Each structure stands twice: as C-alpha cells, then as structure tokens.
Length: 562
Image 1 (cartoon, one colour):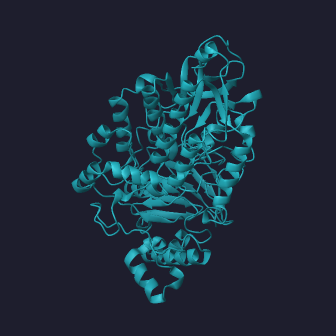
Image 2: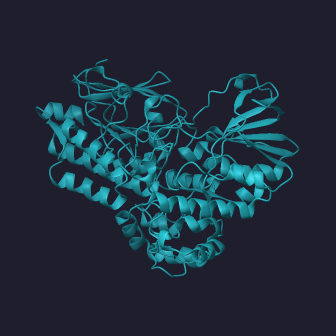
Image 3: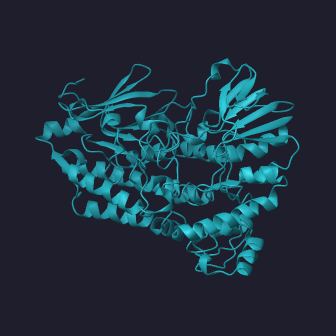
C-alpha cells in the first residue's frame, strides 16, 4: 500500500490504546504541538481497567504510587479511598483525568486497529481500522498494554454451554448475580484468586478448578487514612524521584525503615538476614510472626535455590495452618516451582474460602478438564452441573495485543514473523525494520516487573520527546540499528540468566509459557527501573546511540513528514 508522497499525513502521531499510556500520550503530544489521534476498541478510556471488571479486581500497588506523576494539580486534587484501589475507583480516576484535560476529543472509541503498514515511499504509517478507515501518520505508537488480551483456553464445548460463560478479562459490565447459583471458576492466577472469595460469599456452591497452586499474600485491603494521603501530597516530588530511581518503580512513600506509613503497618526495609543461617527455632518464630509473609523475610530467598525451597516449605506450613482439610491444603500448596518466578499475587481471604462447606476444590493435575458441556464441566473422573462458568485463565501477555494487529514494516515484513522466535527490540522501544514505530512498555523493558505507571510515564516521555526532537532537527525516520538491537536482546537475556524467573521449573507468562505454541523467551528486562532509565537517557545524550536516523531531503519533505 502506498500513499501520495506530496500529501500531508492526517496526524503526526497515531496512538493505539486509551489506557494509562494512551491518555498520557495524547496529553504529552498536545503539549509538544503534535497532532495526535488515539484509537481504542473499548467504549471509553481505561485500557485493561475498562475490561477487567470481575469481582474483587483491584491493583497490587499502593494507589498513591499507581497514579500519574506528571501533573501536580492532579496529584493534589485526587483522593484515593483505599490503600490498593478496586477496579471501579481506578476507572473513575482515569475518567477524571480524561475529563480534566479534555482528552476524549482526540480519541476514537469502539474501533479496533486491524493493520498498520509502513509506506516506504512516503515515510508514513497507514493505520487501518475495522470501520474501514485509513489514517496516515508520521509516527505510530503502540500503547496496547501488557495484559490486555485475554487467553481464551481451547476447551472443547464452550459454545455448547447453556448457562452464563464469562472470562475475567472481558467480564460483563453489568456484572453477574451469583445468588442461589452453582458457579465454577477455572484458574487460580491473580484474577482467579481475587474472584473466588467474592463469588463464594454469594453463590449457592462454588467449584474451583485449579491446575497450578499459587503463592499469594494478604492484600493491604484498608481504607487510605488521612495521614497517608496528606503525607503523600506533601512529599509527592520526593516520592516520584525515589520511584524513578528504584528497582521496581516503588518508593513506599519515601519513608525510612521503621516509619509508620499510616497504612496499618511499618515499612520494614530490605531484609538482611539469611534463611540458610537461621536455626529451627528462628524459622518457627518468623513463621509464627509473619505467616505467609515468610517468603520475604530473608535476603537469600530470591538468590539461592536452596534458600528459596526452604522458604517455600515454610509458606506451605503457613497454608496448612489456614486450611482445615489436610487434603485440600496439600492441593493448594505450590511445590514444583520457586517463589518469585511469577508476579506476586495478592488476595483477600483466599485460603480461608476453602474452609467453607459450599466451596469445592477440583485438582486438575489429578483429574484433567476434558470439556465444557451443555450443563457444566466434565473432567476425566466426573461431570459437574453449573449455572455460571468463569474462565480466569489469564492473558497472552506483553506481545499478545501486538500479535493481533497486522503490523508491517520495510519490504512488507510482518512484525509477528520477525518475532516468531521471540520478540526483538532495542530498549523495548522499537524493532529494527519498523521505522517510527514505538512500543510503550514493550518487550525488553522493565514493564511488568515494575510499577507499570512509572514505566509508562518514562516511555511516554522518552517517545514524545524523541518525536519532537526529530521534528525540530529535520529527521524523517528513526529505527534501531540491527547490531544495537542484537546487543540489547543479549543483554536482557544475560541479566535474566540464572534467576528464579528463568529457572527450568518456572513456567510463567513472563516467558509466554502459558500460551500454547508461543516461543518460550523471557520478555521483560530485569535490570531495574532506575538503571533502565539511566541507559535510555544516556542513549539520547550520545545522539540516539544505537538508532539510525534518516534526515529529510528538503523543506517540502519535512513539511510532509510532520
């Protein structure tokens, strides 16, 4: 597909997505004088928080830190009600941001991007939507989210079920009334763990179908006290600085170890003791004090496999103390992968739920799921009748949304083909052969190993500043040098090598291991938010080292390019 080289583009920047990243991109591009248009399949702003409305859905990062830092007025005026907010409040916050900065006028909702093609003759991207529209832009930014594509399990018979079938990642906006109903939840990852206690409290009977037990910790499900809100608003500048320089994009409000957070507890700081040096008496004492929190009580748990397994066993002892039925407790105990190989799950009364008479655990490792029937679920040993089946089967993470758009760069090469053996990027920002195409929190960046909002803001600012800088310098296109991309991919792999996240026993969505047929490659960058930010800044200071810049030939071409 080609467009007239003499024709100006419709916009300077087209943004795919209107969640946290897409909204900030619209605002940032406006501030820099760039014509911008965002497109989203949802009916309104929110991204993953628009779609994930399942019972119990909430953030796993303190709300004060899981919020924008680019507007002090916004920080001062917004008041979070809980320490870790529920989905409705996060969606309300994003709606408030869209209203306050009038962002919706540059966003097209209810429209899915089906293809994005780089036209080499004009140097523009042609973005096609399912509404039949073609939009031309000098730059295309994929703000599609890391956890935005639900993983639909290939279970025979789904279309035969006569009851209500829902996926947590595309949960009905009107909700589901579980009163008096027989309900099944399939999956015990983060969304399943959050959903199960809520459903159990309402349903006539709940069956939980579990394949892999999970390590989970109690969430700080508390009202956000006035003290904490006031402290944050007085110290936001310092909080944001610490976030940006930290490993995971978190500051814990910038408080020193031992300080009262106003969140119902103390900031404990980084542990220094080693579990392998602890006596049996010390191990029992810490287990008595911290319960499942024992997994974070020692410094060597994430570094030494023997230490990790010892902490795992203490965790299992904590679970056995909570769950009354010994057989159920054992089925709920993770035993074949290390703590830390997957993103930490937080819960509200998850294990206690299995002490209820109206909750049944089905261990799919012993009795695999065969099919969904007209009336329920069939395993290798039994058939169960249900009124509602909820699939809490997770996401095709990090690359899933990109893979579902037909993205084509130079010579018509498809991104999904170039990434067939695993995603390849430079800094997680761009991929060689795809000029002027950017990814927000793409593979090869800290993304899901961090507080997503901190990583999103860093990427949005880097990308938008880059676009404005190239415009001012008369640069037509930017893309990674292949050698620089290869070196970055190698660096990402080296940093992850030997960690619990890449251990042979770890099958996480970080590796794409939950998606049948997906190449097993560790996708995020483990080097830390602060270190990564420094690398990105140094690349710019060195004249976009590792990128290839193509300058426009004349003033007329420059006008057409921007």
